[in-house]
Image 1 (cartoon, rainbow, N blue to C red):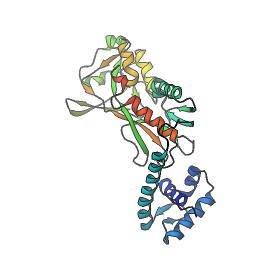
Image 2: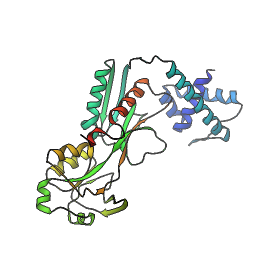
Image 3: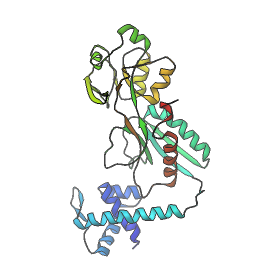
Image 4: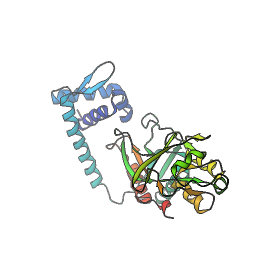
Amino acid sequence: MDRMTAIAVFVEIAERGSLTAAAEALDMSRAMVTRYLAELERWLGVRVLHRTTRRIGLTGAGETALARFRQMLEIGDDLRLALAADDAEPHGQIRITASMSFGASHLAAAVADYLARHPHTRIDMVLGERAVNLVEERIDLAIRIARELDPNLIARRLSVCRSVLCASPAYLAQRGRPQRIEDLAAHNCLTHHYVGRSLWEFRHRGEPCSVAVGGNLSANEASVLLAAARAGAGIAPLPTYQALDRVRAGELEIVLPDYELPPMGIHGVYASRRQMPALVRSFLDFLVERFGDEPYWDHA
């Protein structure tokens, strides 16, 4: 038995919650995964999984083994990377996904620069607001923007996403400029489906505060809210990576600048630490360097 492969199979089963999902991730048949699991249990002399018709779970021995096996696999990965040539040129293809707004405004340019640096690479981009299943849709890397990620996800923080309230000069000339968050009740507030659809939260002078909002337009994509705000439809919370260029151009104005909207993290989410392709690791390193803790779009 190839014990390292059996160990990797067991860890995939434990993390994904099923033999079928592990088989898909490892590009093995389910029968082969079952065989590796059985041989691992014979080698250890204990059962590592409880198996029923509906679910699987770790035994006490399985929990102990999982922690040790993760360490072994990570040590093996670290050794492999240390022995690899420092100047090894990335090559191959990866499939990535991101929101339409971030993908079009900043990620596409980053991808173009990366491909120019590494001509033996290819990147397939899938843009949309839907949170895709990485394994089922064979996505190598998802760029997700969120206040909090599911703790079960494997992710690397790339940067920060700040937001500001914006409206067009024409809208503010017609409806007036709010001075306090309570004034937003008298305005048409353009909302995002997934972030503050009915309640906007802020920090003001270090203290949290919130206000109930309403309006005649809600959307699942920041680009739609940006276009509507530019057209004079109302006040919208917009990510700075989109809004600040429009503010500098005079098409939008920041509303209530003393009230800070909660920042979100920009994360690179991937399916497995141990089986991360070198190209994914290289691209993640590139994005961290390019965007950073204080992204360029906030200071241009």
